[in-house]
Amino acid sequence: MEIKRTGQTKDVGFQLGVRKTLPVSVETAWDFLFSDKGMAIWLGPLVSGELSTNKPYQTVNGIEGVVKVLKPLSHIRLSWKKKGWADHSTVQVRVINNKGRATISFHQEKLLDSKQREEMLKYWSDILARIVDAVVSHQASGSC
Image (cartoon, rainbow, N blue to C red; front, top):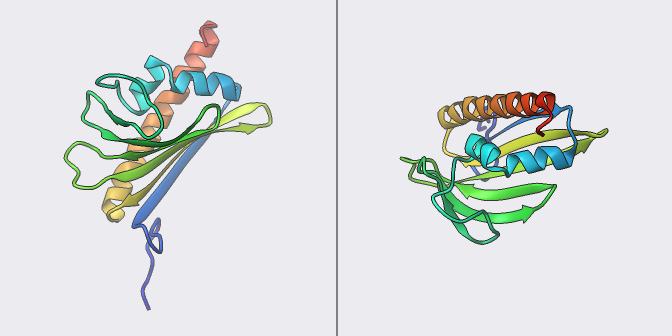
């Protein structure tokens, strides 16, 4: 009998998810995530162009992939490969209405092993903390 480890899926390697509810609307959270400042935090500045369904993207930090789904005010799903990785994973970012507040969720799957899962769990947790700080700071200053 095979023992599954935390985050191990039946078919697609390992996965993880992190989420946080912010004291802003879905619209405010979405607009921030897809602003230049927000994109720089969670994805990285794009080499050129913008994110668009079925189009490849590349960031100045070397992250690359293809946008699979882009549903404004809801979610984006994209293949995601960090510089130095051999394979793509899948990342989904959701903004969910939670009683008038916005829950931002990052989910990543198709990770190779528990070590890569732990690395990316820390990565996305840090990213989410930076987003929360930026959104709350902007809201406090009235620019969000």
